Length: 117
Image (cartoon, rainbow, N blue to C red; front, side, top):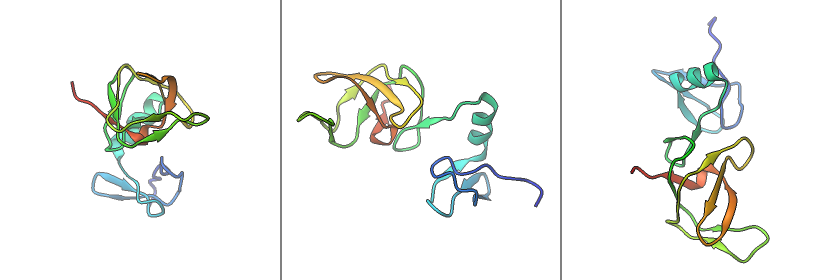
């Protein structure tokens, strides 16, 4: 096998394998397409995906899929809260946004779902 597969984007494991068009990580179970991995490598950017696998871009509208406690406060971001005009950033919390009634904050993409408009 002369071809080397990219490491898992979720856990950085080097033990990925390919099944048809998908790349699979045996350690965390993450699945992604080889085309998406190649596109991310060409542009130098990692794709940010929501909880169900949709690719997010700047300006998208998302909804929160789980109650989220705001750290250092008694506020809670409720399920179904719609957030408009997100901005993608690097880091642990990969979405910067302004949540109605709470203000500016960072969210993790695993707790949001893209809204089709």
